[in-house]
Image (cartoon, rainbow over all chains, first blue to last red; front, side):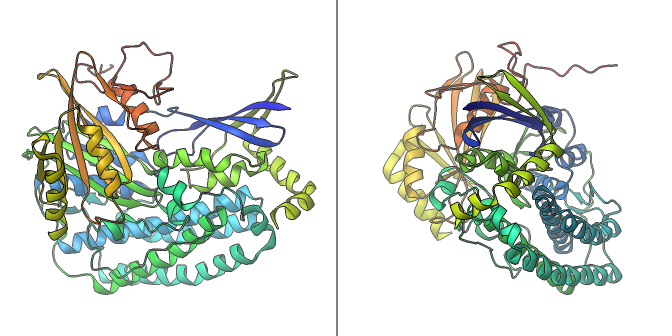
Amino acid sequence: MSYRMPIGPIHPMLKEPINFIFYLDGEIIVDAEPNIGYAHRGIEKLAENKTWFQNLYLLEKICGICSSAHQGCYAQGAEYIFDVEPPERALHIRVMMWELERIHSHLLWLGVVAHLLGFDTLFMYTWRDRERVLDIVEEISGRRVGYSINTVGGTRRDVDDNLLNKAKKVAEFILEQTKYYEKVFTEDKSLLIRTQNIGMLSKTDAIRLGTVGPTVRASDVKRDIRYNFPYAIYEETPFEVVTFDSCDVFSRVVVRIREMYVSAEIVKWIAENIPSGKVDLGISPFKKPPVNEAISIVEAPRGELYYYLKSNGDLKPERIKVRTPTLANIISVIHMIKGHYIADIPPIVGGIDPCMACMDRVLLVDINKEKKVVMDKEELIRYSIKWYKKNKDIVISERW
Amino acid sequence: MGALEELKNKLSEKFGDKIKLSEDKRGVLWIECDVSDFKEILAFLCELGYSHLSTITALDHLEENKFALIYHILSFENHPKIPICLRTYINRDSPEIETVLDIYPHALVYEREVFDLMGIKFKGHKGLKRLLIPEDAPEDYHPLRKDYKIEVGD
């Protein structure tokens, strides 16, 4: 029996809640179609009407979780436009914030995945540890989210030795906790059943579909902007690119967990090796940049974040273009989800780390019977957990 | 800078006067070319290993009555550390350009985004429709164009 099932508008993306229409054959997904734009705020147009310095605080509001990546990427691009080099110490603080943000973003995602799979205890564990990161972030920047730490030509705040020690302790704590999460996610039988061999994305497909970030690295492709196009201080920072080769949701979990080790190591390295000096060039907010254009790319927690900036010599930019990582990954979701059960939608859609996988409401429409079933997010999760309990034997025999 | 020189030589050998090459201080290679040649150049670059299209930027040059399209491509394997931006111009009165879907399948959403916000049509793109703005918006509603002014409320 064929069904057409719209899901959403939910918001798995940075700016936009999303609506999926799934075409089903019984329980199997035949095709899917995403519709985005439910939270389109016209930030690119708005940015053309604000000054270069005002835009710092506008663009970080694109995303609540990776706000530092957005603001830092913009600040870096604006520094190219103004043709200034920020001080070394500022770059170290900026990178430390980026890596702390990556840790808390991945912890958040792990919790969400655990919740989607019906493992709420683990969700509470990861979010408890995330608080430790948010606390240190708050002490450094003054805010838990939307840190506003970057400015054109450096950072707005300095860190003292006491804070650096605290950051180092948090990094050590995260290293310890991550070991536990790696053990749980790679050894727990019920988590393995729900993640292994689900949402396959082969290496060639990942490249063909332009996938970015942990999703592409989970398909065993060594693509990391920090490594391939080093920016800020990543050229001298010791770190390795994490890849994993099982190409499924499990692979994405492993890559993100191991990236947390890497990020925590970078935070520790920065706390020990930060140079002294000033953190800001003190550029006046009313300084006009030269006529110039630049691109700025950073590795946000969800993948490659691309900015294009153009100045016409005025106080306001001529054009700012933002390409967020989830927009690049949304095509691959459609590819991954084909041939899977309805119950696999949460882990697969959640698997690309869409910004807050909040499935607001699901509408199941039976084309033949004209019957509509409306499910909210909780119901869908309960439905998927129940379905797996009932059909456990089929799934296990199919997958092993 | 050896790799950059090598890449520039390869390109100018193949295309000669058809392209204008320039580089900025951060090691980004900017290519400017005619709209009739841009697809051939992209296909050549894709063969060289530039298999990742990051995004497409459209710029509105209102005074000169034209649009600029910038294709931002990256290569992760063969030419590390040299991002390429390929720029081409089209007429503002009849904004149409060939699709690059056959070279970069993931251009799907980026072309739809440009069509939606700038009103540039991509020839050969099946299912070209609005991406961000609701589909029932007026046909000539393209807010990123420079002649669209933001109305400030009270």
